[in-house]
Image 1 (cartoon, one colour):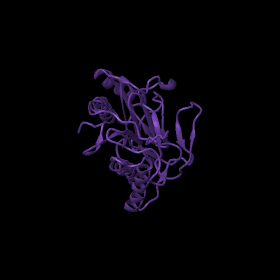
Image 2 (image 1 turned 30 degrees about the vertical axis):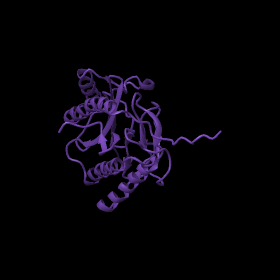
Image 3 (image 1 turned 90 degrees about the vertical axis):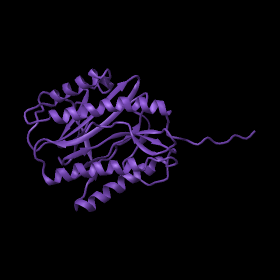
Image 4 (image 1 turned 135 degrees about the vertical axis):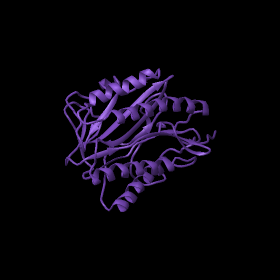
Length: 265
């Protein structure tokens, strides 16, 4: 008896389920904007965490990070050489020129939204501005590759090409952080498959209409190597170079990629 081999696909949602994910994503977007607006010299990252949690709960949603494997915050607040998973703290007080990456997630009606962005406190150096913009452009390149029929590593390759294009644009090298990347998302925050931020195209499961991924490049002004601190969360660059992190939750649709974590203008 013969069996047709099933094509491996990136998990997909119905149109209604994508709308539900977008509702959760809109809460995340609102929280990110509120946090950026509150980020001033003298404000602690714990203050920012309280802002985010207030926005999320005020919208009838639940912070997806809080309690996740024991994580204590509603946001990851990663400042300067912290790449990801910085723990909000009263002891981390923002200063003019700091480069701040905020990662935030929310659950609404059982669906997850997950998004991140990097911004400056006051005036940023040119290098830091370009680092953040290069990371955003790399994310945008990955989003553009989220089309029906693409393979998973087509997205990885597009992100990598976006980084290399940014290097040419700004005339400086960027490090693609090794070992971290995007992921599937839906009824859980972190689902298979893992999405690398570099690599050869044409491999991995196929994207279909309704497939959802969190696309999240992390770049540095130096090394690709990182270390996890003793708190078992905070990830820092090994050479002390600054890092940026941009992320959107994205769906494949018949009309092209759909960002499910829109931010209010």
